[in-house]
Amino acid sequence: MKTKKIAPSLLSADFSNLEKDIKMVEQGGAHVLHLDIMDGHFVPNITFGPFIVKAINKVATIPLDVHLMIENPGDYIDAFIDAGADYLTIHAEATPHLHRVLQKIKARGVKAGVSLNPHTPISMIENVLEDIDLVLIMSVNPGFGGQSFIQNTIDKLHRLQKLLKEKNAEHIEVEVDGGIKIENIKEVCDAGCDIFVAGSAIFKADNPQKAIQMMFDRIT
Image 1 (cartoon, rainbow, N blue to C red):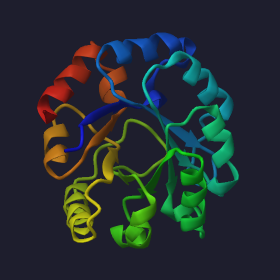
Image 2: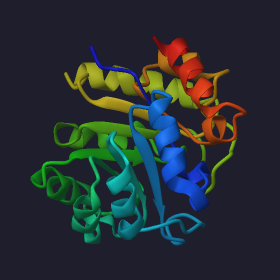
Image 3: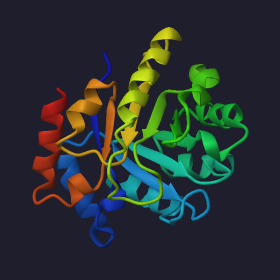
């Protein structure tokens, strides 16, 4: 049985004191750190690149879940893996050569993921299921933190679980990113999510460590 994991999104952390926030969520029970990489082209925002991932890797003691929201992701695979990515997720919409890029990630010994935007059907990943370890379902339109959860994500998760079962691919982890909070995390869990990305709901909480624990209590 797959382990349920809470993945705080550092997009919502305090970048003037990033090491403190990383240690805080680690001590609060976080299982993975989610790093959103944005290029200002694929999504309308710019965050950071391999240099910052490398700095985070020096501080963090839990795996780094690196989510590339960038065009031409295949050109940057080696740089992010060298920087310390443990999971490396690319968008199906961002490359015409999805299989090739996934093979490049797998060849480096890193867990390979594919992310789908809210409008993208799960059929996009049907022919690469043998090549991936993770499916990341976007439950908001990517590019900014603090957005509201798109409710039809629940139906999409059920369809994804049906596909994984039909293809004997139930070992693949399912991640959801966007609008996850204490109030809806159980519904998302029941629909088949394994890794829960939460930014504002953790870092903007009065007690981020308590928020992580409350989330985890609802999914276990």
